[in-house]
Image (cartoon, rainbow, N blue to C red; front, side, top):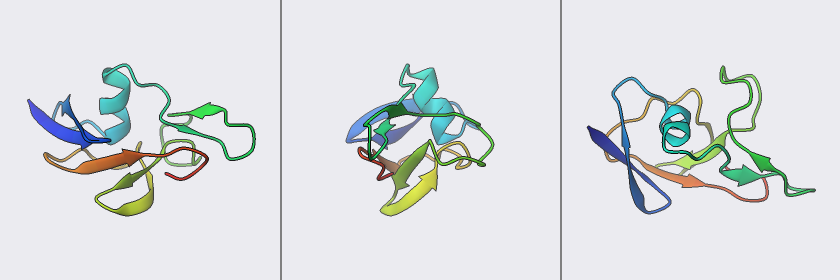
Length: 84
């Protein structure tokens, strides 16, 4: 099984999973909060229409975790207060 790095920790994933799928499979259903009311967000639509699942991947912010296939060794940073 391959691994990605989430907030500095190794997280296993199965080939073909998106970053969001790997997070949910590991039990993380929320990984950022909204700017104003600090409400938890994770996957909502799962098809890239909304922006609830934003993360930073290999230094590029604003990536929709539901659309990005997980790759071995990719570094993902989850956000707070709306920064993904």
